[in-house]
Amino acid sequence: MSEITQSMDDKISEALDHHDCLVPLLSGGKDSMTVTNHAFTRFKKYCKPPIFINTSVSVLATRHFVLGESKRLGWGLQMLYPRVTFKEYVVDMANGFPSIGNHRFVMGYLKYWPMKKWFHKLLDEEGLKPIYVSGVRHKESQRRTNNYDSPFVKDGRLEFVASAFDLSNVDVWDYVKQNNLNRAPAYEILGYGGDCLCGSFAKKEELKLLQQFYKREFEHIKWIESLIPIRLMEIQKEISFRESRIRKMSSSFFQKKNDKKKLELIYKQRRNLKVYNHWGDAGSTDDIEQQQSLEKYLIAENMVCGTDGCQMLIQERLAN
Image (cartoon, rainbow, N blue to C red):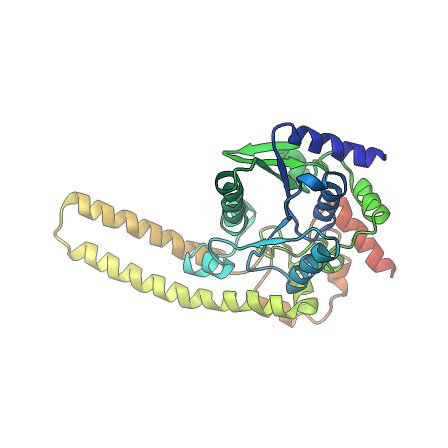
């Protein structure tokens, strides 16, 4: 037994001291493929089908990949869907495109809500004591290092174990190679599995990569972007109507106060759509389409993310 396997075994065994089933979280990247394969290889009798969350803004090829690989490897798969679509979050709810600062809010709608609903179904309706198996690693990035200090996380009734928590990038690549695991094709292009294109941490290079290699997904983002000016016009009409009504109304102090609070919320929505009107840390999709060359994006030092895994992919791509 390798040290890599033993490290993951220890965490899963500890998790099973207090839970009776494992539910791997599958995204298609190398980390989630590693922890899912490990769980089914070493603790199959405790495993429920992994879950993949269709965020409504993922790479189509990634969805096909997880379906195909789950069937090939005999894992089964449960696909979950978000409370609202990405378009509804950005445009209808007038949050604008997500940024680093509000990443946790968009993930609350796109990923956390369906995860929570499924967990409670297993817990309450089926009488199980589940625990989610996550591919989060402590050393994956500086952000992960700062945010996670334990492989076990509990949030309300939801519980998670990060079985690969102590593994390095090299450890994970070794496991992938030794077990002949595939990873989502998007990983070769984007540096991650492509299960969620919310753009919170995306750089300009990533939008260019989508435009070059994933036209369907790029056009989806472009369509959402095109709806923002229309939504802004609707909001401005509502603001004008409410402002006029407040000036004219002779209602009580408390009624006016309530109306002003509603107006403040609409002001915030207007600001959101004016400030966060494009995807990721980039210009508009029109700006990206005007870029003719991809070469400078491929050699960007911090393309997509700053993790060692992404940097290794960049070097491999340039070498080939």
